Image (cartoon, rainbow, N blue to C red):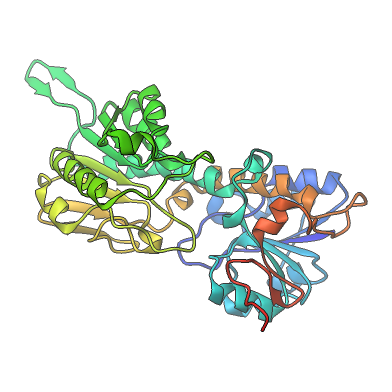
Length: 375
């Protein structure tokens, strides 16, 4: 199979979908690799490194010529998508929605969305959301430390004692747990909240204090499959009151409730921001889908009554080399499900992983979330 690796065209995208290491593995398996010129420059991978690994380096047209599959980080822009031959397999973060699925189907590509890798054990090594969220959680705290005008750890000096920063992590998923660990390593006093009772133990294992209204309803708030149940209005009101009181005492807040294909839920209101001390910092990981904070502006750092609110769109992209390496490995682990025993293009359409990821096939929208029912 001939695989094309595209140069990213989104203004804030620094990652690349392959590394010399994954290219060597692809070539050893019998595949041909074409990399668009300067595709890895922002991830500290020069064209020479890709060429040395065995890839062909060329223009967009040369890269796409004869490609059986196209690997990218972000969804190609309309101009690039129009240059991809019909029937080509496209694998990337495709911003799944009815509109994007229809556009991909119209372009005639067989599209697999990395956002939709199923959360099952067999797919963990392919789960790009987790690999990138892990880095995003780490980077969020690093960004917060840069914006925060004080030290994180307690410092005892002859001139006096510096109190440790108080950091509150909202959400204890992959990003949140890494944010907890990073804030702890930097010396902050860390607390966290999550809607899943099982998260309490995970937060505690990292040295954080769990914040939640732990009544009987909360203890029953998780399904057998590990998902959160819908809470009653009464519980939600009690939890909101507790969180509001807690946020007022915090120096750093990191919000992590990002749901692919859906608007981000509001966790931090304007009133909560106004209750925080001047100099406090909020880093909102959900900025690309509207933000968890009511005052977040995408890709901006805004200040409201002395509180800085950072809405960076692409935190993993601020760690381009590591983020690219992990994402490239996610794709490499997915590759066996895209070919037959002879290495030819043959997606395993009956596999639950591919079925979960597939947005379009043979010119039609196939994902159940977006496919139109026949009359």
